[in-house]
Length: 333
Ligand SMILES: C[S@@+](CC[C@H](N)C(=O)[O-])C[C@H]1O[C@@H](n2cnc3c(N)ncnc32)[C@H](O)[C@@H]1O
Image (cartoon, rainbow, N blue to C red; front, side, top):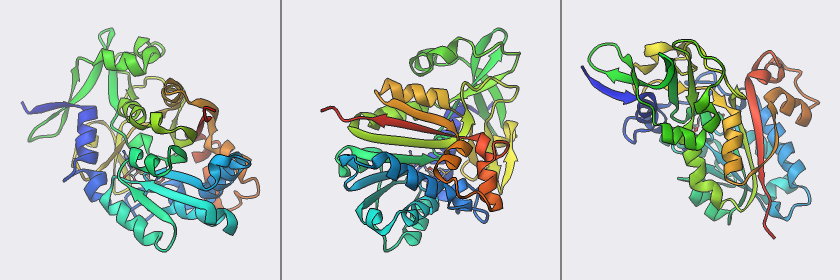
């Protein structure tokens, strides 16, 4: 016996419960000495690339006087710091940098790290957008993968939703009836059949991210959204799916991912074809999408000499495993 919840409900509880959620309460830090390392926590190269991209697409655009940048989920503040350092003094003086962060421990780290600079914190995207009067460039690195994901499994000729039975022993997986209406709304093509699945094959849909986007993108009247994360386009179903937990830099898969709720990070690969479609459903135009390595080579052609920058750029390393999506909203005149 024991309570059964969907994987998505489990992730929402384990990561975001206001009192016990991993991100809200327990995350200790980002970077080699923190709970997990991300590109900005390892090297300033991504911040330099984003600063140049920002200056490139903002040139001559009245929207960017002053430049309102909203970073979602700023981790330990590394991207904010690298981006602001990479801008020249004149551009930096015009930069108005907003951070939307749900994590109390990370917000404290960010405030310490970015003290004395012009940064403002907000609790949610609508508050940040209101402060920018709807005109902003939004930047999010490794945020979508941290949203609760729905996991589907192919079983006896149809898709079922994966759930977890929680009890006194080891967590067990169970197969549940999926919410087809919700999935059809956001992922109509994926509900049909991604490829020819074998018994047990799984894939994830970040439907909570689609719903989150729909809650604030209508308030973006002009600007851009730059999304960076690991994943790919049209991700196929695969034997174990991509959900995994991180516990002291160790990756845990299968039912071990559901141990220690609130103390392990949980994540799933991001399908960028979904992200593209969700933006287009909100009237955004896809300006560019491609591997992170291509983005870094385009905007920072003079770098990538040190080993970390080379790894982040390498198509066989993080440069290929991570992707970038640039979506735009032009002003209606
Ligand atoms: C995997 S960490 C990435 C941190 C940082 N962007 C980096 O690259 O180092 C995910 C971040 O997203 C934040 N986050 C998750 N959901 C959020 C939401 N709905 N609004 C704002 N921040 C969120 C977390 O608190 C955390 O800072």
